[in-house]
Length: 268
Figure 1 (cartoon, helix red, strand yellow):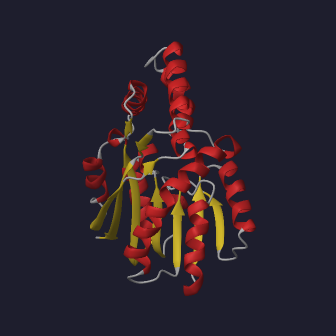
Figure 2 (cartoon, one colour):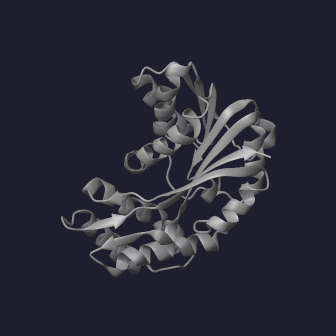
């Protein structure tokens, strides 16, 4: 997926580990309420599974129901780590495939549930991907989407570099014609193929050193793109990165993480 601007494989192992520790709890609560508590699925497809943290969590939730899960990602380096994660957890109801959801020839149908988090924000061809995702479902299946709104982040105590980094990330998305911050258009695109049945908004707080470091780690990864698109200078990158790093270790500081729109949708 050429649209993906972040690192993959071992180069992104620490950031994704932190991300999953922050966002998995609210994701699992939403999935439990909207999927497992209504009609336990026999099969789940996770799209953009990364290192397989959520895939493994869902595989464990499926065990009492005899269900299986497939995790798909376009990056084989991501999947190598995901397979090792599943092996360490002794999960036999899980498999991984290298696949691009935006290519319709790679779509296989019949899943009771599809799940993706922070996937659609990275896609230029979002409508094509949503069509493929909807084709992956059985007639009675549901899709769960989780997508962020970047402008919702905040910090205390106030320091300008935090908001500068956030504004630059949103600006980069605009330069790349990617949707980092528009839930209205997201819902409109989903509604082309689905009826939206439930929506929830979740925003975890970042208080520990590790949690706050994800802001620094994410900014560091997009800094090359920021420079390539002349959105800031090298001096600005170093200044902002140093400030974000210092904030991570501030004993009294905290930040609002990404505000995540959690959506349950059923085929039209």
